Image (cartoon, rainbow, N blue to C red; front, side, top):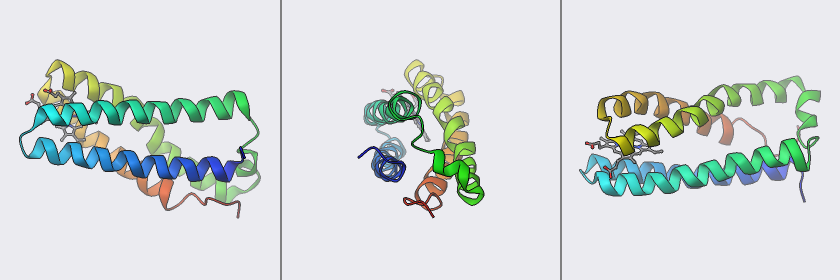
Length: 136
Ligand code: HEM
């Protein structure tokens, strides 16, 4: 059923799953295997993009009222805002990570990596631990 809590739960699982890939990619590059790092991150990028576009399809087209209950509860709205402060910027930094990686702009890639890891950690913590999967 296309309900807000179901969408949230699905996204939590998706974020946890792709984070495993991101960690594996960072381990790969730390061990000197940048080709493997690039391949894993291409999968990470694609899956994350599909999740974001799927979410947008739901909230803009299929069921625009699915998250209305968030606006009715200030605490819930606050938790969502805190999450969006991390997740929206990380969605914009992600393509820049792919581009700088593919093009071999290593210094820029590593500088952005610091931002990306911070933003992704925020996305993970605020999404998985602070967004309730059920309406309060
Ligand atoms: C978040 C921490 C990350 C770190 C510390 C990191 C670090 C690196 C390093 C050191 C390289 C090798 C550069 C070289 O010497 O040529 C590299 C390559 C690359 N990275 Fe990342 N990266 C990170 C995240 C990402 C993300 C999120 C993506 C994509 C969404 C990505 C995509 C790539 C690609 C495509 C390459 C080129 C692989 C190849 O040469 O075949 N990286 N990265």
